[in-house]
Structures are given as structure tokens and as C-alpha cells.
Length: 290
Image 1 (cartoon, rainbow, N blue to C red):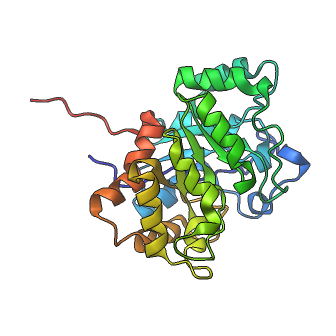
Image 2 (image 1 turned 135 degrees about the horizontal axis):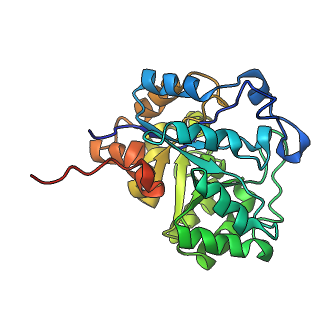
């Protein structure tokens, strides 16, 4: 069976705070993780309702900090449908050992969180040389790294992409570009410049579909620009459920509607194909030739 939809940006939060106690990065727990906790079974139910076959669950740093226990425990229960994208302090002296330990528990990707709902973006440590051994390991092990930042971090990300060409770097929410000026979207010139690096990928989420209808932006011109600039093979969809408002099904429907003008092959790539490249464990099993 061919998987039509793969979500590379959902989150889960356990209701068992004794087993999985909150310890948020930056010391402040995100409102959404307190108000809308979502157990792994709840995510699977939402995926089933939406027709999403598989997912790369992004660890919730604003709830659990660097403790990836809940996401790793959860994906080990459902390895046929889920994989874990975890957070590690890449500057820590034992970062490579930590990454290897989490990999044994199901981690197949990493996430760097430089700011967002609980703290303004601070990219000062993004390209700290102390983190380079961890980046080297990611390249050796084929671990994609998604980065939560804004346009302020793009110059540093370009440097990392050049230094570590074997690491696939994914920009969460397209790095939240300014696109209200409309086509040709010159306010997002720093984002378009990332196309020079073959190992930089774009994550399309509800934050993207929201931007697509703000100011002078419109979905047809924005997604045309994204596809023409990066190619469908470097674009992937994520629901940001339950952090973003709405059900997973609703968020998928909006993305499908906004990109419905694209050729079917392009849509298939964005909604599943690129995800399977970034997280090979989510690829469909090959059927043996008769």
C-alpha cells in the first residue's frame, strides 16, 4: 500500500506527569501543551480520521526539555507508523553519547529549538563549535535535523548546511518568513537564498497556510514560488497538531485545498515522498517482484 499522507510535525503530551514530568526548555511550559495534552493514542486516532498513514513526532521541548522519554516510548509501541524526532543539547560534552542512547530508543531525527511560543528567538548558540561533533554524528547516522527559528537564524543555518553537507536540515514553518508583501515575495529574500543548499528542506505547516492568506499573499503564488525555488522534493507537510488550532484533519484539508492546483505528482511528493526521504523508516515496504 502506498502511503498518501505523512505528517512530519505533530506533537504528543502525556497525561501522566508522574512518569513524564514537565521540564520545559527555558523554564516556561507552552500554553498549548498545558491546555491541549495529546496522548499517542489520541494522535493515532486523529491520523486515522484524517487518512494520515505515518508520522515523525516532534518532541515537545516546551514541555519536556531534553527528556525525549515520552516520544521515544510511544514510537516503540507503534514502529510501523511512527518515528521520533528528539531534542538534545548539542553543546553538551556528552551530546554524541546522548544521541546514540536515544537512537537505541527509537530516535531517527533531531530538533533544535531556538525560540518560539515561550521565548524570543536566540540563535547565538546555533553554530557553536561545541555542537559540531553532534552534527558530524548526525551526518554519519543519517539523522535529519529540523530547526525552529526565524529569518534571524538563516545566515547561520546556511553556514551549517555548507559545513555539514551530509545532514538534511529542515526549516520548521519555513522559518516563519515575511510574505505579506505578496509576489514576488521580496521580503523573504533570505529564505529563497536557502535554495542554494541542496541539504536544506522546507516544512509546510498551518503557520504556512495562515501566511498564505495574509496581506497581499495568496496560496497559488506562494506555493508556486516554493515549488519553483526548492522543488517538491525539498518540501514536506506537517500538521503542528495539537499546537496549532484545529483538528489534524482540518489542518490537512486546508493544506490540500491551498495546494490543489499543483500537479498530482508534486502534491504526492510534498505530502509523503519528501518525508520518506528525510525519515527512511517511514518509507513504504517494497513489494518483492514475482
